[in-house]
Image 1 (cartoon, helix red, strand yellow):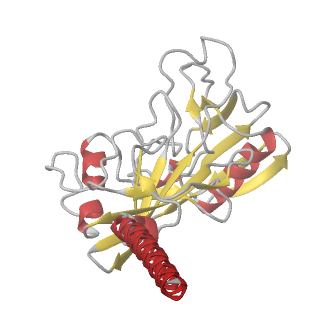
Image 2 (tube, rainbow, N blue to C red):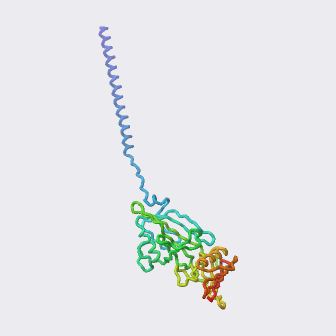
Image 3 (cartoon, one colour):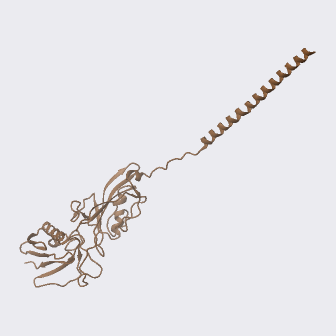
Length: 320
């Protein structure tokens, strides 16, 4: 009986060990699938996260560094650029005493050069381009622009460089030039836009000489690039305002009064060079003026007297 009891005890112990092992395996079997499920869920979450796609840059911002959509250009009212035009940062040159300040921009748009300078560029024509709209709106197609070597004298613009200027009423002339066109992939065009301006001069505070709406002049004989009277068709200094005073005549001569930007020296030097370019011989030069003469039978003579840039005169003698 004791041996039998011992055997039964061993069998019971073996059975308990088998059950304990089964329980342990069952517990391990539950834990492993749980960890696998967690890993699978994390992978799915990472995979389903949205991918950010960079927004393509407009072509004009790639062609012109720092370009932004064009809103307007300072000093050029009425400018109608092609739709979707971008404009680059401004750079300025000139601007010294008696000089125009020239601001330069690079513009970009999708289209051709004809969108800027095409069509008939006359005041009466139906405008089809940027320059056409300016001319139709009152800008003058004189094709003049400040000389980049000194920013005081005006040069004629070439066929590839079209220039317009404001009317010179109320404010000094503004000159606008268009050139340096370049074609790019995708039908895009870039070009250079330049604006030449000068501040209004400080004129003599005397309503007898300067009153009403200021009137400015480019040449001694007016504002047109062409003239039927070449003798008096010489450039006047930048920002020259014409006096409203119409008196001052003496026997054999008349006085024309002006007010100009710059200094006494810049005005005297400018007029001396401009009149020499027009064929005058210069003599009796001083810090405040000179005598100029041209032609023979008849002879034309002018005395230039610049005591102050705020009010100076040209004494024009009757030809003899």
